[in-house]
Amino acid sequence: MPQATGDDCADPGQAWMLAFQRGDDAAFTVLVRHYGSRVIAFFRRAGADPSAAEDLAQEAFLRVARARDRYEPTAKFTTWLHRILYRIALNDATRNRWRRSIGIGAGRGEIDAGGSDGSGGSRDLPERVAAADSLPVHELAQAELREQVRSAVAALPEPQRTALLLHRFEERSCEEIAETLGLTVPAVKSLLFRARDNVRRRLAPLLGDDAGGDRDEVRHGL
Image (cartoon, rainbow, N blue to C red; front, side, top):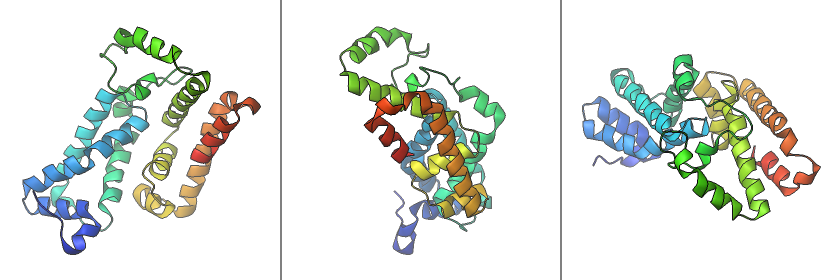
């Protein structure tokens, strides 16, 4: 297995991509194994179901492979990779294949990853209902709130959604997000403000005065 050594350890993805560029196909395999789950998670958080997220991840890595000869290590590998993910998310034809219709009760497949049989999860619906009935009321309310947060994020327009996902889940700075999206730092800060505001507006009916700690958790989490 190719190893990143010396200064390359600061950015192993860059080292593996450069090795792949030199003809080391094993380096590409390592790169996919290292970043694959993160890429799938990105598309899942953006609203894709498990199967579609895997398909989109495959498309992303195909684009990485095709860009081998053109790749230049002018930025962090993850920044370069996120540009690819962002372009896929912007593609209307692709988005129509995997974006869910958003509404009350949407997004349950995102919580029950792997629980669907391809028909919308109806096969295991009784088991899920029984499991929900066994939860304390507070835990059930939190689970429903998390579902609605996921749905609200998935419904955001681009590039608000990608900016929020990169900031919240990938822990990218505004400077890194600006480099990924080709924007200025103030523009990214504006995107994040609007994204959070849109999510909170969508969740407003669930975040009334009686929401208490759940309301605060969502507000701080975004």
